[in-house]
Length: 121
Length: 195
Image (cartoon, rainbow over all chains, first blue to last red; front, side):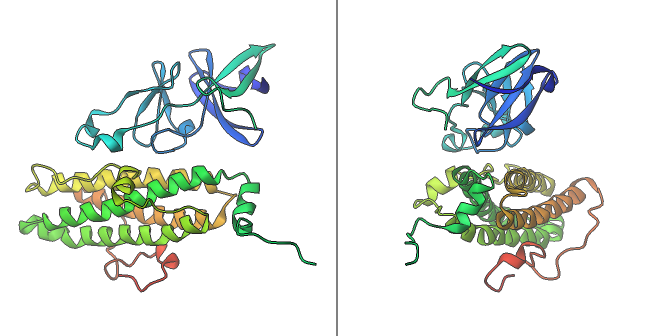
């Protein structure tokens, strides 16, 4: 676990982009809960810290695709993309990281929650 | 005795990696970006063909300006992908599926010119977001990619302003190009006579 920031460094319902060991990750606070995830949208790789929270999801600023912050799965695509080809709408899962709060500090495990083979560099 | 240099020693890549660029991620964004430009060029061809009648004739050449400049954007950024060690997908179908913006399909009620302009506007707005992401990733770290991306983005911003003006009467603040496909910003990165 790597110390990232103080819990008060992040306003509620906002997120920040941080660099840890040469790797960028996003630390967010959604209704008081701290979350950490890859900064790039798994659909078309846009920076997600320019997006927004909606319910339990992060909404990508590029196409408004929504990814669940508990599972990393794509859960919603705007209706105006209904006509688009399925191949274009396909997306991988958002990479999530485990976080811990200790003494008001946010710690992140750079080993992603869903990929056992991914280790911190 | 001089240091042995291999094909993998690309200093132009090493320096931006040292500056903090994840080249693999950048290449994914760039391929998505030029994919959107290329597919948009294709779809704008169809949209332009359907600008018919008295109203359609009025916007046909503006659509043509945007169409050729989007092709220019593909031309301007693609060499950078290869410089960075990337490549375009071998299969054009895969390329289209990886495009950073959705397909700009001809609307069903295309005889209403405003419906065509709405499609054009959405495509330009998506392109602005797409190149803004490249600018954000490269700013202060990869001046060459940043310069190309910001020039493309400037032209996309102007295209958006044109279509906003046509759709809502919001002043765009500029004239049309001096000639079709002028690319006043990205043109600096084109290696062929353009227009």
